[in-house]
Length: 238
Length: 238
DNA sequence: GCTTTCTGGTGATTCCCGTCACATTCCGGG
DNA sequence: CCCGGAATGTGACGGGAATCACCAGAAAGC
Image (cartoon, rainbow over the protein chains, first blue to last red):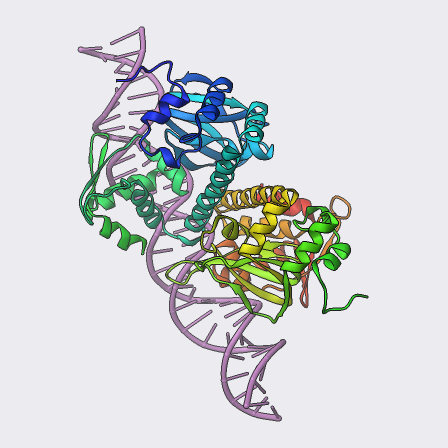
């Protein structure tokens, strides 16, 4: 059992399940120690905002616990959620490295903890530890591919139902049990938010849930979602 | 007057109008010389394909003359054009650097010339000349922002007419003359291709042209497009 | 020259989904 | 425990765009 407070990057790293994928894990001991010196940890309540689209980048946030919603908005108030970030993700990296304004707004949707690293300290750190700079380049490249996937989804998928199926598939646990076993997923998003992820309206999402339930693709038990068959969903995406 | 053949990166650089923005321009003389050793130049006819989505990356292409269409396709044959590349652009950089498959297909839509740099030679070159590696990082970051803009357009813009207006605005010459002067643009795309850029159908694009002409936003003279008022287009994007 | 293919224009029809409206359920706080 | 706001379910309606169909020019090929 670990303490909810006083957690640092090192602790987080040692307990995080997919360490090798994460930016600041598996680093040399001196690098990690330096990292712990320049980072500061804070706890954020639900709906706290880490940064806002258009702001000058102050630095990056490394999410330890909780979930963060990344979104961008049009001038008319329409909102598009581009990603739900999970523990281990680095937020604001592109903006901080390139010194462009943050391109998204980051808002906590589940309370949690994040380490903040100011921009200048991060840049110095990167110059000092070349190993980490390489990780950053890789992460930037990965961000690009994620963005590219999003473009394909938005541009090539016409119907809301297809996009919805795609979204559900992306929620399937990494290590899916069996080819077509069921999967239970904790759902923390509102229909409104799902609508903002797939570019449709709340009502349509509501109807999609009904449809998918009727088609036996889906089952809702309180706040957990039961996906019944991966192949069936895949057939909808085609 | 410069020779259409025998052009090399150095020549291109010396004559290209926006040198500082381009990856391999304004480099030190030794770097440029090395670059000229590892590159090979070829001429491509219209509809020649430089590389295909999904292929293992062989290297990058630096476009000297002509235009290239970058596109991605869904399994059902639907196509999305993500960008029309112009002379000076570097194609296939992300894939080559990160060693992921090319994420788009690159096809010449206007015949032209390109320099090819094989992957291994490029990587060695980057290790040797740190100045260039920095340029590459900047270019990758720029690519990311371009992708992000595309996401915003696709995700936040609902109606085809709005997307069409946005596309026309993106065609306005960099140095627009006066606030609301006219602009003449050479149009080389078919309606079909425009449709693939804004995610709609050929018929709808055809109708959009009619509408915009009727609304005095637009005029077509042969293959040149006359845009009549930038503010009016901007109002359509809202 | 002619034919064939590609491109662009336009009508008719269908239907999906956004919008509006309202009822219902859920949930947290006093 | 009840109350109020948020989240959800559902019907009715209408419009905009995809689809289908066909034709007219333009360009390209033989």
